[in-house]
Image (cartoon, rainbow over all chains, first blue to last red; front, side):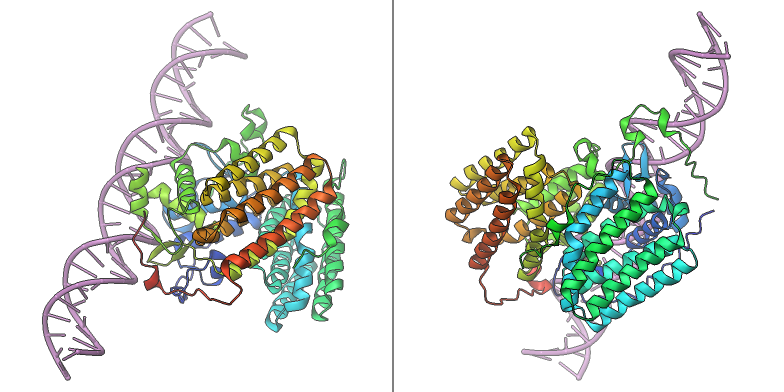
Length: 262
Length: 262
DNA sequence: GAAGCACGGTTCGTATACAATCATACCAGG
DNA sequence: CCTGGTATGATTGTATACGAACCGTGCTTC
């Protein structure tokens, strides 16, 4: 039995959106109170929490009745999740939670390595007190989850940490890119959640905290350096988890470490 | 009670799609022949070709009757375009083509600057002959469009060029990220298409060709360097086009109300 | 003349209905 | 027992229907 509480509080939305038609990046906080949005978040969360496992089929009508809505908004939510690469369609046969391969994850790592040090550096420049608080809150959350061996919670906190750094860097385009990549990596990692031990999570949390300290101390170089270190460390843990046969690290992180132009 | 028979034996199916539910990135070539896909591409193209201008409302029923289909697949296509940041919703009032601001474009530039040199470098390493041919074809297309002053075609060729380099770099995640950013930049630039002159396009094409030459000559350093130079050059042209003064383009919805659809 | 209000038309958000297609089970034949 | 065909149920892809919200217009009222 899947728990899926259809309890969406759709009442508390205010719109101040009329004045300018900004792209979606800027509207994420005040989304429209549609069933589509609710379904999108509910299904995504179910996937990332491991309730829906890779390879599992997503039957529209089941999802609809779980969420107590009709198929129409569910389909629209699924279309977006498909576009994000969390679920994959097979024509006339349905949608399935993506089974990412090791190669996909390595590609995602590479993508993040191209971006995250840059974001960490900028976060050290620009982070506001509220953003710092959000980042630290995510770290604490991750630490708590690690201690009670809550893998899904730990991964979620990690996403929040990286999202916090990204938002603090002041480039929503890049931040959201990293967030989506993290989601897909975590989708993969959830398949290995039985093999994750507490020490792995603790190590990751320590690295997060180190990055956070550098950001708090307004030390961009240290933040970028620690971010690179963290990414290398993540790769090593990934190899230990998945097996490192033919683990070709094609890219040199050093190339990426340089600060992109502006 | 959720049934969800997850255990459909994936191994016994001969369809390659079944065996591995890869993310959408890898399936772009064999997309499902749905009306949704058709609508998605048609509407996107209409936006990027300037048929639907920024700020213009997108009435679902009009689009549906234009495409000779019902509203359902149109809505799903629009949901994706919204997620990509090309169109923006106003709750209960409809969707509008995004009016990006100068700041948005600068953010997109920054994002691309973090990624494109990396892709150019990798393309110089890994590009296959077919990929090289695709890149050169895009360049030639862009040159032809420039000479006949076809701005939309020129921008489209530019997107194809950058997409070609991205694909050749062998990281679809990053490549698609850049492609989507380019689309949004071009959406903005189409608003200034009257101010684009042939010389600007020629310059851009020359820079594209320089990057291409470096890739062909398998010179990663030169490719990355020329990519950085190109991005700086694009920024300068952008400043010349848009103006350095801070003309904030906040618009009210009333100003938005142009003629619906095209 | 300006402000407020009612009303109708338009469009969205959602639900439901229908048809095409796929999977599975069953049956017949070898 | 195995193979192949067919029927039936399930699920998708698409179309249509319907209620609710919003905008504009015209009237009323001050």
